[in-house]
Image (cartoon, rainbow, N blue to C red; front, top):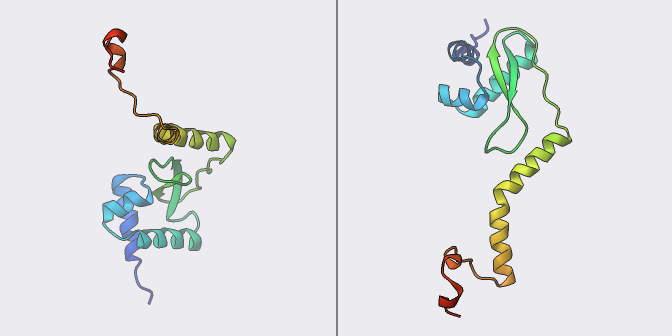
Length: 132
């Protein structure tokens, strides 16, 4: 007699109770190791495609490098199509990286060229009173 799928039943109950969630959200909600949740969902989707879990949409990850995170729901049905990873998407990622690091690059460039830190109050004092 086969064992009952305790992990799969708990994940299904959590998805039905809270609605569609990503794997990190399931891990936080169930307080289980990520490997356990990942293995259960992957095994169930491989052995029983479209029967227990389906992907309802993909969500962009913030603060994590990589592709979009799948949002799972309990129940049968087809998966949502995965968004394309085209040039516009890569350009957006590179632009976000540039925006986040340009101040750091400017500070390094100024230290390399020998320029000191800029005094923000220097423009408020008239030229005649400035000390050389």
